[in-house]
Image (cartoon, rainbow, N blue to C red; front, side, top):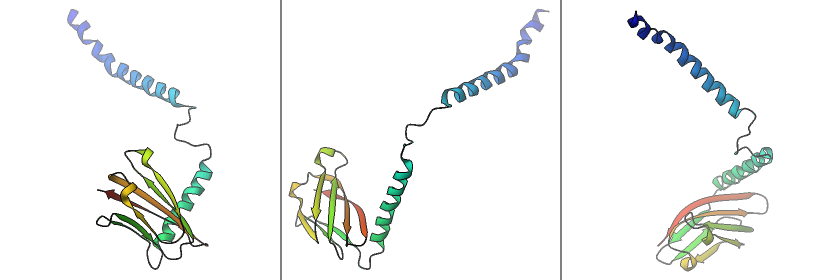
Length: 145
């Protein structure tokens, strides 16, 4: 008779496991229901329109007959940007490891810069310009030695 009592708890194991799993899932649903994720923005529609405009600027730059060129000349220690029909533009330099070194420069026409003001290491540049009718944008990574 004692041997039968030892084996009877195995009969309830699948039921207890299933009920525990259901309680766990229901508690997760209760904790997450009604909460808005942190990454959801209130003005998501406006942000979507802005991101589509940015993608159109990249597409405009890719469709140019003579492509825009951002060059790094390590021997002459110079950066240059050349594109057709520039009326005005902005160079946004960012350093991934140190945001305090970020720079923004306005330009009108082709531009050449000395790399002496740049800390050595990896940099990213985003070039935004217009020809008076369309906006353009390119992004490049470069290294300063």
